[in-house]
Length: 326
Ligand SMILES: [Fe+2]
Ligand SMILES: [Fe+2]
Image 1 (cartoon, helix red, strand yellow):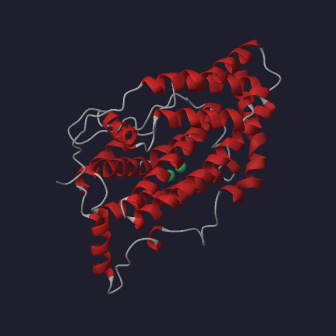
Image 2 (tube, rainbow, N blue to C red):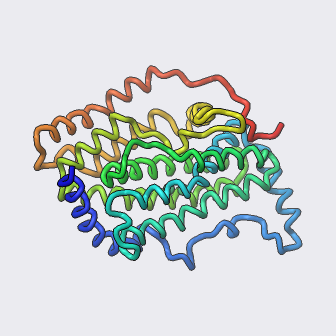
Image 3 (cartoon, rainbow, N blue to C red):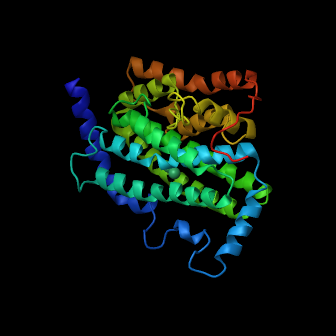
């Protein structure tokens, strides 16, 4: 166990160098990156109330399910304190306060923080949301934390974040395109810029793991296999509403997303395929016997999951969320 941990720390130190070099590629300068107020009505202007009226009119065109998914996405973004505190617990991250990993964690958090901020303000202004019910869910989700099956292992964690950033990219992108179809161009723009942040973050995490495969292929392969066997659970899997038990709302949220085609079982497979391609899983060398077996499992998984996905029925049951007025 000791050897296992020491080797990972060594690899983390090794990757840290590249990360410091590449940070500016994966994160944007704070002075010029978009901020929530670039998209929202300016309350200091005389046109504020007419702009809100306009915002509310275009938000009327969004379907019930789409609003529900957007609220679920927002709560997920707003549980950022959970993700930051968990990242600092990953082996090798907090060894040095001013080191590359802590710097990355702070700067990543700072970018992510704008997502929940923007979506929350937008939802508040639409007039369609029971803000109190939504806020209770947010407080619950932060209080409940999550259990994503990674432990403090950096390999498992950054495989998870690679997957998850790609998944959030897909879901924000789809909300953007459905909002546009529904005539809400403001929401569409907002979700579009959030999606492109997520795409950059995915690139960073994929890059960390790519470097890991170069120096510790067998362990990286075993970690990838383990995460896929456990299945990548979404960070909001403990989602609940007022008066409910932990996790009780989560299934309704994912049903709505599946129904609308915002994030589906097929997307899960597509993300897996992308990771397999980007990490060149088929051509990784230096594997031991267990690593080879892990690779075989991973390579066969997309087809297996696709067959399962094809048999899956679209969840039809509509659910009344406490978050939505009327
Ligand atoms: Fe985000
Ligand atoms: Fe993200």
